[in-house]
Image (cartoon, rainbow, N blue to C red):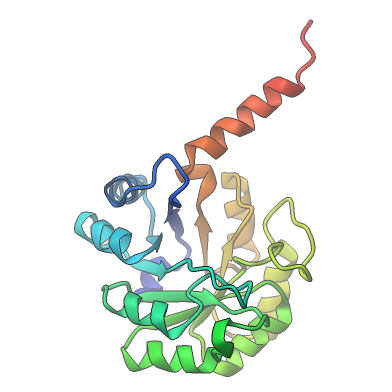
Length: 227
C-alpha cells in the first residue's frame, strides 16, 4: 500500500521552476535518485515531464502536482480538471492539489477533482493552510492532507518554522494522515513533526534548491560584523 511506503518517512520535493538554474527534467530525475540513495521514502514533483523522468530513475512513490497560474484565482497547485487529467497520464500514485477555501479557476469544485482522481484509482492529497480546510478535506473525501499552504494564504499567518501547532490541531480533529510540509529547514524540524504525529514530512528547498541554500549562508556573512 502506497501510504505504508511513506509512513514516518522523508518525502523530498524535487522541483525547479522555469526561472531557476536547475530547471530540467533530467536534473530533477537525478535529484530524485540522489534523494532515494539518501533514504527518502517518496518524491514530490511538479509537471508531467519531470514525473516521467523521475519515474525512470526511481520506483519511490511520487506525489504529483502541476503548478499553473490562472487570472481569476490565486490557486495554482493542480487547480483544474485539465491539470488533473495531465497528471493521470503519468503513473504518480498521489495527486496533490490546493485544498484551501479560496475560489478555484472557473469555480471548479474540489469534490469534482477528488472524484476524478479516485475514479482513476489514485490517491488525493489536499494542500491546506488552516484547520477548517483540513476538516473540509476529510468531508470531501481526500485521502490525506498536507500543511503545504500554511503561511502562504493571507489568512493563515506568517510562519518562520513548520506549522507544528496546526499539525497538532489536525490530529485532534480528523482521522486522515497529515503530511508536514513547508518551512522545514533542519533534521530537528523533521523529528519534531513526526513526534507530533505527522504521518510523513516533505522537505524541498533546503535539500534541492542550491540558490536558496547558498543565500542562507551569504546572508549571514552580510550580517556579520568583522573584527
